[in-house]
Amino acid sequence: MKIFLDSIGCRLNQAEIEKIALQFRAAGHEIVGTAENADLAVVNTCTVTRNAAADSRKVIRRARNAGIEEIIATGCWATMEPEKAAELSRHVVLNDEKENLVANYLNIKPEAHRAELAEAFDLEPLQRIPLPGYRARTRAFIKVQDGCDNECTFCITTVARGSSISRPLDEIIVDIQSAVNGEAKEVVLTGVHLGSWESLPPMGEGTDFSPHRGEIKEGGKMGILIKSILEQTSVPRLRLSSLEPWNIEPDLFELWRDPRLMPHLHLPLQSGSDSVLRRMRRNTTREEFRALVVSAREVMPDVAITTDIIAGFPGETEEEFAETLDFVQEMNFAGGHIFTYSPREGTPASRMKKQLDKKTRKSRNAKLREVFADMELNYRNKFIGKTMDILWESSKELPALSRDEVDNGNFQMQGLSGNYLRVRAVASEPRWNRVDKVSLVKIEGNVILGDIL
Image 1 (cartoon, helix red, strand yellow):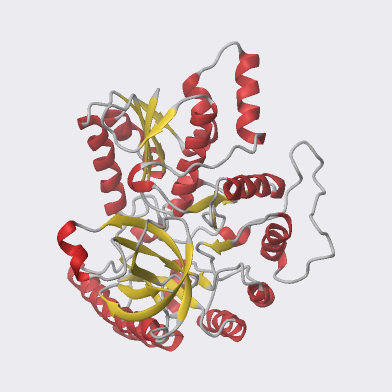
Image 2: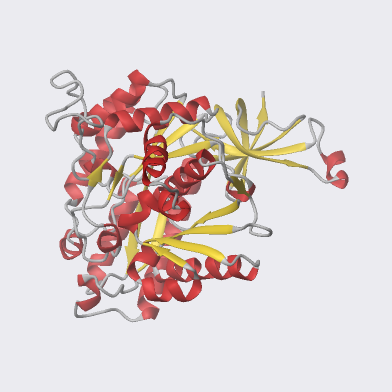
């Protein structure tokens, strides 16, 4: 059977779709890069914003228009609106059933055989193969945790994903090493609230397990996870996705003295005003966030610290918005995502008084984008003239008419530095999934042009 997989939204969704691909391959099926001629499509949906929900519906319709009759809709939008998802797809799999999606769909009988296959999904260190088509990635996204217990007032993801659940360390280690065996040059740890990961007993053992109990003090629980991965796998580059600023021990960043840890931290702030943070029920303050940033930069002076900000949260006054503008400039972020607040049914914020009008919300979004564009440009300018290691994520052969314009190759490469700078260069051969030293020459749009050394 030919299976097309697609994912909308966060890196956690990407990690889950890669695991689904691994399981279908283990059962002997083929993963294809386009919807045309596929027998089955699986779409991992998102509902973090209204646009994400709309995109989820579009992707399902696109698969249906390509002629696929068997479509499985799963993920957060499908979980929150299962009846609407059922109108567009033949099967709807809720988030709490997603782990068994492949085994349940294949419905292998007798039950003993199905149990054996489920066990193989969990235990077999199968080699990772990047997804074909436009989702081919050199980085492997590994899910270590799901759900969140914080209940931010604006967040629908907590409703869709449920309470925080951590994966056992030994499962994570097996997944990472299999990705490395599959020639992944970089592993990205993902979760809804990655910083809430807790050490769990290995599969089939008791409940009092804590790896390296008493041995690892740096960074608390996250320190246990990171240091164990560095010690027990041969991962060349390790990156963390979004880390909520609470539950992070200040000395966690000491672990970044290991060069295999990529100097990029995404620390969602959401607002630079303490009063707005309280209404958002964010378990942090300006002072606590500032202390984290200072701790990180003491270890990594050139670290890329990026964030998320919500513009126009209910009740946000001009003074509170000004506090946010001042604070983000003080933090001097390397970049970030700016979201215009949109009420999500089922969240406390949607029922708050003093909802701001759309014009005000969009105006504040635009002002924040201007500030972030300047900060991002200033950050990238710091590295012009320097040499950095770049992992190439894409390789494209130049058109014949363009080849006379370059003197060092016919392939356009694009990839990422350790601190998440997007770099483009020309090579004499396709170098996808390789790491090269590159001299950074100049900024062009949202990328830095460089020369491969």
